[in-house]
Amino acid sequence: MFITLATLVGWAIAAATYTIVGDNRNPEVLRWLALVILATPLAIFFGWVIARRDEWRLAVACCGALYFFTPFIAGRIETILTPDAARQTVGPHTVYFISVLALHLIGGIALAWWRGR
Image (cartoon, rainbow, N blue to C red; front, top):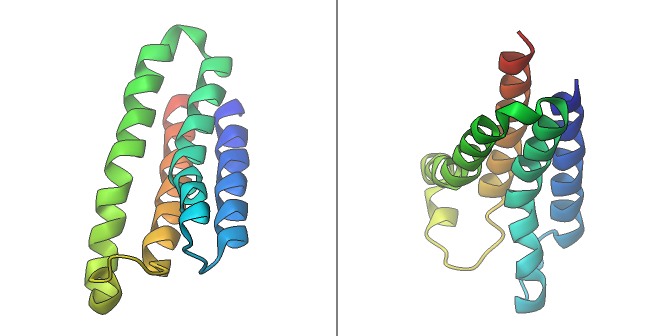
């Protein structure tokens, strides 16, 4: 229950941050896009530790893997779906960030289901 709730809270923070930033890619705003990638795995970790303190090592490993591998998978998804947008060094990268949000939500729900069984 805590892991699911933490997943939804972290995802809401990430989605709100991405919505607020929008297509603006000024250097002052780019730092907030890191929150889109970090918020959900970090929230999942805290929810997992609150629910099961003795599993903190497993939580670190799973949430760290979710945080580390998601950008690579989202980048590949963007390369397949919109190759022209993926070649830009600075741009909106909408498919990338939507993929990150989707993968984090799916991963968080899957981890909550796995640990709830």
